[in-house]
Length: 557
Image (cartoon, rainbow, N blue to C red; front, side, top):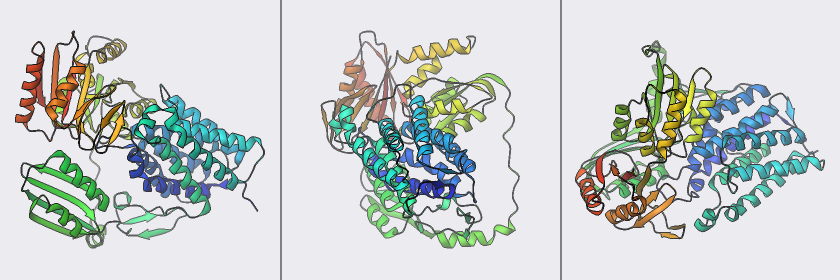
């Protein structure tokens, strides 16, 4: 007989299967990003968002519907990263708000839940665009409503028709957004949502990818609780060997090389860390085949030191002494004096961080284009500042929604999000702050300051593509402006100068150059001289930003 309802245990299993399905599709979804920058992150952001909730669900022991819904909603809201992650969390929030009062749900409840999910997601976005994850979500709701209205009660029929329609709408997203059509991809956020729905159906059928806690999310004593109450000891490690090495380079190690090595290591392991210090590269990775890591490393130089540790044996030894250790009391941060106004900024790179600190920012959140901080990161920063009003500078368009979500979740302080899309905009906003003005006056002044700043960022392309009629080839340098690609080519200085040609206006007075972690000061000085020579009537300043991914961040004011 066809199933007409879903109970709490089924929904929990489906949610965990959806999380794992999305995780399995993460890299494919990342590759769908339109801009070919070395930090495609839609799949990563959506995975981290749903996994934040999945860990809570996984730890539940025989929950009721209300408890399950709270874990899904709260976990995803706090873990939300990037625009796609925030929208996904809002979809879960809206859906669970409807179903939380039921012991079991049927097509009618699912229909109402989908309507609320789409409503919540659209409200979270100031200027919703069709051809995105929102379009796919709305299509799901439309199809569920259609199925409900014709009187269909079979959950299996519901899933099959919804998935087929969602896939059809996803395939049409390039027709809705020309930039997708030109790049030859479907919307990455929509693809992520479809992966989640496919995982839900797999879970419903009992064939979803098993959900396992990794080392970082296991409990301290090596014990985890499975849904339903079963307890297991010492979770297996996905990657058994912790491998570290030091390498003496025999040639210049460019940023592209570092990213190539990083991508390779992430394909054979996790926990990847790479540090470059002059001619020495230090690498750390968890993997099942240390030999493959060493073979990759010796392509770039001579091994100086290698260590391989069996993580299972190490964990077993450490767990053997758990009972002997006494828990240390948690240290509390010293009480901070109360102040009327505080500031939080998202920043990547020591130099840029120092600039914000000198301007009066109280708390820096490490992140940016390469790793979007979560809503919980924002909430933690807010909690550390003893102020009545806190201004937040996201400094990236993909972080603004998470900042807004943190604002909406904060009840005891006034939170003002200044929608800074770049680091130079964040700097300009802080400079515009005047202590004796009201919060409202400062908010207006800061937002006005954003329009006076143009930003260009220089990185390299990870694949061939076409954007706005510009043909881009893998490893090209790209100059990316506030609204798209401004220049590209094989010569870095030429790309910088042509980018600035399109940024500088008759009223421009100052060019500020922040060079990245992979740029030597002498090379940055050569760029500064070239820029000063081309634009002799403008002041040109440069300093170390230390940012990853982008060789240069340049502002024109």
